Length: 372
Image (cartoon, rainbow, N blue to C red; front, top):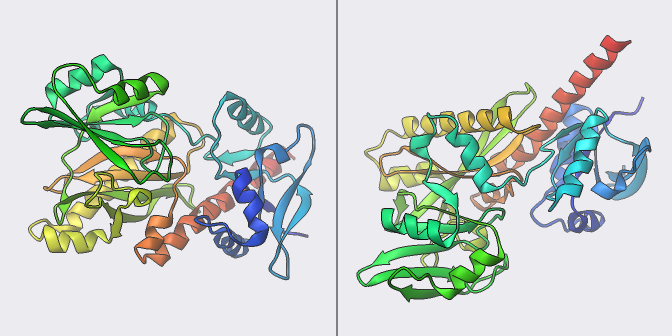
């Protein structure tokens, strides 16, 4: 009997690259290796490869000669979503798969930042760890300018630092730092100085064109004078429970306030930063607090959003080592671990979702045997 298949749902761009082996940040071979370990075969397909009423799907499967071959296979019952979709049509299609009995984890991974913030605000224990946040309108931006010396304006749905702007109070008024374009590849930044209540035109224009949030700039700890935060990978594993796969520090470059690696941020081991900059802090306690805080967030979000199993949390710490929540990524890019030379953790970010797939397969078998 052939081993069962586990689906990896990917976007069009990655799907095209799989047979060439040039998959950039997504290491599909790690899924295949993990599948062998757990007794199933990972296969890779797109949302439109699954046809309503059909029991089979065309997917890339690694053959015995090491090449990925497009193969017609039985439609997998367990699927890990590694694609991001823009709208309600895709949301409903994925929802229909769940209605057909498929176990699709990380089914929807594009929740707005304000949605996540509001869910966390519902638990009073999280409130001291959250930045003051609201929808970005000119009136709300001006309100937060009265309360804080630095505020952040960012798209409600974006990742890797795209489109983020920062306002800082100056002796004569305010300074707005903003990216010239909203492209992921943007490397050019400009500064607009202003005073009074009238916001710069570029800020007003962007608020009109898209949905943004505005929030207090958190008091992040620094490394060599630059703010840093952490990418914490929180995933479900073979037990079906949340666990910490790894954590890595991201330090903002000298030319930009963002810590995102895609925006020039540099990665370091947190232990090295704490030892060098914060020797007075008890390192084990700081790390334990980060672990506990991240697990509590994942558990809370998992209890309120369907089928979450793989999250990349951006967690800050204060100079006293207290954890702060920045944002939640439903499709963790994972490569920060590779950049930091943390290859064991990097590989584990692929292995753990496959371990969770094994857990779900076992649950499916229990249900099937019970129904016989």
